[in-house]
Image (cartoon, rainbow, N blue to C red):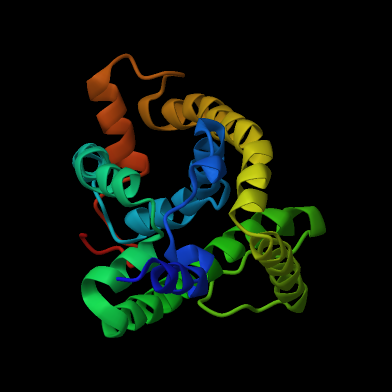
Length: 232
């Protein structure tokens, strides 16, 4: 192919369709910020509560976490990372190259639906935390019953979307600020609740071993009974 023609074709491509230039590569802190964004979004509060509501048992949770995390690490190590390092293309561009426009559009629409539902759930969780400051009653139905709660959801959504509009760098920086104290909150919450929960269930302030921990989970958290009182 003529060099001039090839250069013109490359020049006409969008920047996202080209491999990321070496001078635009980020260091590990950027990756850590993006990774922390998953926890800043508090997906655990949505997924974890769902497991409880659907009647999962303690061993279901532990085995599921073990198997899921092992598979995630293996897939990232042996599939995702090598492809990303080798091509330096975005997911959408690489999918378009190997599967074509139709599959890319299908993937995009699937993402729109999935992440709309997940984002709405996570914004609602964040708004639920804020409602305590305004003494708003708990929203126990699948629809909101308080106008102030709806207003809080809209405000939280505006903040989240506004940050996302600035791109991955803004999300990474924001997550880097939030992640440290968020993990402190997770840890502090467990340390505060565990003695009270253990005292109520086991009649002692702390579990003595693995069997006590399993009993605590089976009797108070992952009971194997769903929200309607039926076995999971």
